Image 1 (cartoon, rainbow, N blue to C red):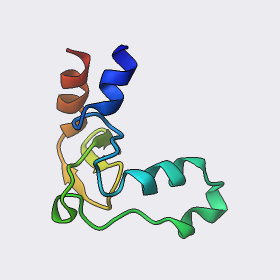
Image 2: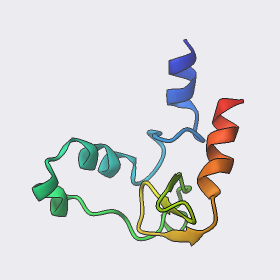
Image 3: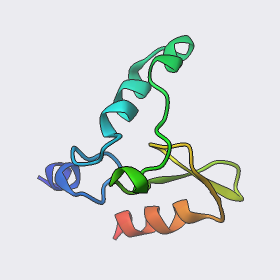
Image 4: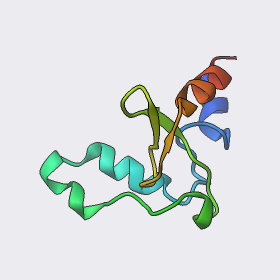
Length: 84
């Protein structure tokens, strides 16, 4: 049941309560030439969601769901929290 707990956890990477979650799921299943059909959102926080960071280039972090990019390794903090 650990997978179910992570799926329902609002801090998990993909959550039903996140406003851009469905868009991210669609983007993950579309062929590359069709990604324009489901662009990333503008900003998760302004839409009532939260950011989920990934490593862009080792020096900056990008959000899975929106277009926001911030300097620093924010993805390390998030991945360490999930592993606990």
